[in-house]
Length: 105
Ligand SMILES: [Zn+2]
Image (cartoon, rainbow, N blue to C red; front, side):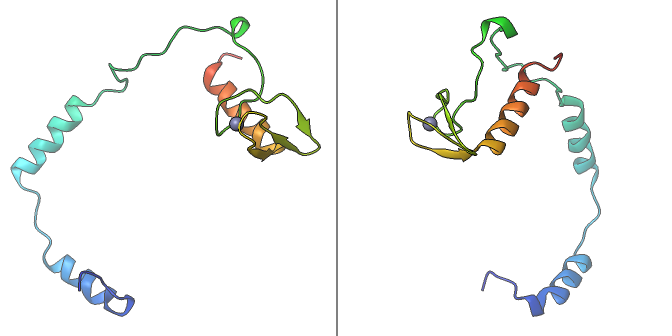
């Protein structure tokens, strides 16, 4: 069967260690090529320009991206899709989004 039971695990790991092969020159060359081609920033990234003053402020529904209009005690409820979330989670999520958008603030 294509599965390993817990009782077979030690034996399986030993057989893997026994069958281990050395990295060949071509493996090393491939690894070096991949490292050389690594790019820190994607050339396909297209971020629109924005600034703090021009964006609408508020908490956005995690399910449908609508702005949340009101809160009920410790919960928020999206009027567009009905999704509810704890106020704490929504605020923490929004703080992370804010930090991502406005690192300088
Ligand atoms: Zn929603």
